[in-house]
Image (tube, rainbow, N blue to C red; front, side, top):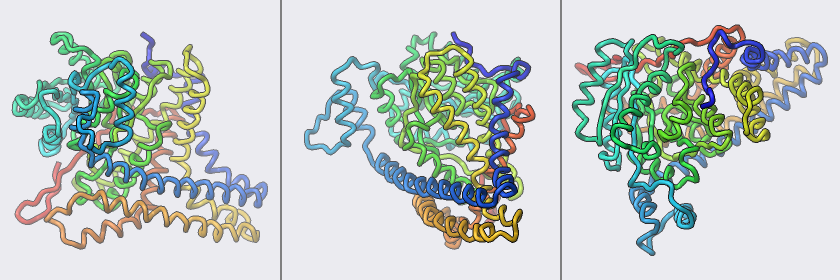
Length: 539
């Protein structure tokens, strides 16, 4: 088996260290470029700023159009009778000739009728792995209930709760209590304790779910379950699948070209507790939801993120998830990509996994936790060195045009994440600061403001989708809370600037100086309830 693991810190030398430093070098160079050009030639600086703003705004408008398309697609998919579609996929035909079905459903039935089926829906056994650290029963139990509320036969679902040994006896006790309470509802249910201090493992979710999957592999062998039958979905403690998720996943898994060389990505929607979170966290949560709705339509750019699914056959081939990174979800794409020599794809599942917005016990703790979460996500820049190392310095059979394109998108995405908000808000003023007497430099802020005003059009799309995807307002809130859901978008420049740019630059600067994130900073979950007529936030 090819070694797919990230090199140990002591072995990251030479080209590997250079490419770890590359995103920071590119980002800081981009931020310095308007100043450098202003010193050399103010006209060149103005041209650079205008071109950059036009590109940025054009992409923003395109994103707004895609998010509307993605939302319409998501709504249409949620209205489908997935149970019926799966039954027809099993039978290989639509029994009712008068039935109205999506065109792609008929196309799938026609395509599959001409070849030997790899796996049938009735053969699929879903394995739901929920990773737990110190989350409370109030956070974890609704996730289990969400799985149980699926429009799917629970006797074809195995529940696995994998908890951290370093979390102590309380976490272990809760996991076993829930398994005992809900076990009879599933095909089977089990809890695994991930031991602490395993050599060469970073403290994080990757080690936890990998340990659970390896233990489940033993269960699979003992019960004579074929690895391709077992379809694994990994969830965080607050991830609540839509009732259609398991059926939709089954359909896509059984109808795709090669289920072993694929993973399956549902749409992450951050609105479980959206009414309870403070305004900046709500804006970030909505923005993250928009990103995933949009990305579901960009097949070339789709990656594993948070909750995702992959067969045990595929996971065994990749030796499960990485145990040396805090971004094991996105990294799993690259791990699988290199394992299968580029013959690997991520299929979108246009059904939501509902997740929590960041919420802690106090406003300040929530803002801090939001930054820590974004820093962990932006640490995906660490994949750049891994991809270049595996793709260009290790022997493989991946088509070079595919590898080069994906590598470029990876680098460009992380650099844009870090610099775009800063340049779009500040670059127009830099030439005038360097050359206060220059006519062109003083006209540039006016031009920039007119170009940026176009972005307001895209903002309306974001507000519209935000309001349409809101769950019902809890009774504990007055009507004015609904007004705040619109007013909150005044925070957008602040959240984009502080959280996206600063978090990305923080992660890239860490990689630049070799100060790695050596543990998974868990986003602590808090729950809001009413006690004695008062709103109480507790973990």
